[in-house]
Image (cartoon, rainbow, N blue to C red; front, side, top):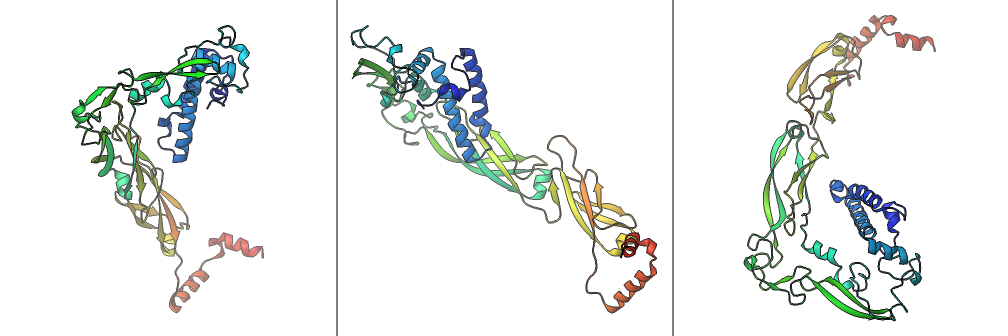
Length: 387
C-alpha cells in the first residue's frame, strides 16, 4: 500500500485541501461500499472490497496532517527512503540539530510499519472494539409459475451465526470471567522502544495479548468455546409478493449472521427461481400464448376458449385470420410488483395444416381450391403473373 499514489487513488491533486480530500473520499466510499454490491458476483464483491479498503487507507493517511507531511516528504507513510518524494533534507529532526539523540514518536502517525507485530495504532484499537455488522446470508427459493404470479408464503430453514446467549457474546463464562490484561495494564495499548541508525524510537500499538480490549478471559464459555458466537438453525417465513420474477431477490434486514461487539445483524437475501409454465411465456408482467386453430376456423372465424391464469376467456376470431396474427387480452397477465395493475396476455394464432390426409379429404380440398376464384388469392395470382 505504501508504494501506491494515494492522491491518484482519491483522484485529487497533491495540493488538494482537506475539504477537497473529504469530498473525493465520500464519493468513492459511497461508490465502492460493500452494501452497494450485495447482489453482485463474488469476483465483483472482492474487487469492490479491495477498492474500498484502498480508498479508506489513502484517506486515513492524507487526512491526517502529520501522516500527510511524512508521505509528501518521503513518498511513503512509514518515512522509508525511495518513495520519490524527496530525501532526508526536508526533515530536520534527524542529524546534527539533535546530535543523534533519541526521539519519541507515536507510531500511529509515523513509523507504524516498523513494529507490525503491534497490529496498528489507535485506529486498530478502536476497530477491535467497534461494532461490526454481521455478514449476509444468501439462499435460493424455487417457485412454481403460479406462486410467483399470485404470491405465496414460504418457510425456509437457514443456519446462521448468532451471539451466544450463555455469555452475552463475550466468550467468557457467564459473561463475567475476565481479568485485567497484565501486558498492557488494561489500556489495550503497549509501548516498545527500538534503536535504529537514526536514534531511539518508541512505538505505541495495540496490545497483542488482549487485542486492544484491555482484558482477557480467565474461563471460556462452554456453550461457544470462547468465541462468543454460535451457529443455529432457524426457520424464516418468506412472504413472496405477487408478480415477482425469475432472478429477483427479497432482502430481510437483520435476519443474517450476527455482528460483533454489538454490531447489527446482516441481511438474509432470498434469490428467486421460477419454474417455466407448460403454456405461458412471461415477458415482464405480460404473458404470451400460442393457440393452434384449423384452416376452417381461421377462414370462417370462430370463438376460442383461451386459458389464462385466472380461468378461460373467450376470444372471437374474425374470418380470414392469418397464421401468426396476435390478439391482446387486457389485464390477463401477471400483477405488476409496483401498483395494482396487471399485464396483458398476447395470444398468437397458429393455423395448423393437416397431415396424412385420406383420399377423400384430398379430393375435397382440390375441389375447394378449384372453386376459389383468383381474386380471393391476389398474392398467388400476382406471383403467377410474374412467371
